[in-house]
Amino acid sequence: MSDPEWYYCLKHHAVEARDGCKAEDRLGPYATREEASHALEKVAERNEEWDNDPRYHDDDEGDSADDRDGVGPFGG
Image 1 (spheres, rainbow, N blue to C red):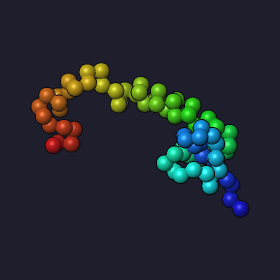
Image 2: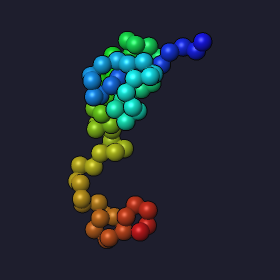
Image 3: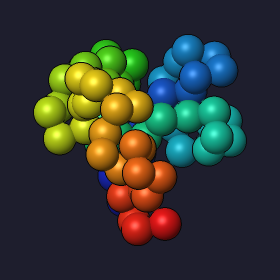
Image 4: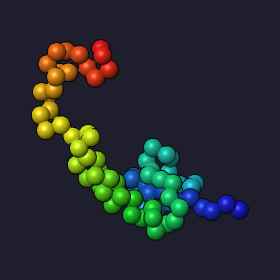
């Protein structure tokens, strides 16, 4: 038997096994029940990291050269 997978259900705010709610209502899979129980904390940490990542953060939103000349980042 394989190791169980655990999920965090966004609808019920609870940890569930694989046969729980539908995928669109869950985060995971996680290796342990404990890890799944901290899913929302992990999401918040990752969002904070991404919000502060200089590769994805523009201080002058809407004022890039691409926006001014009407050409997007992919040349169109």
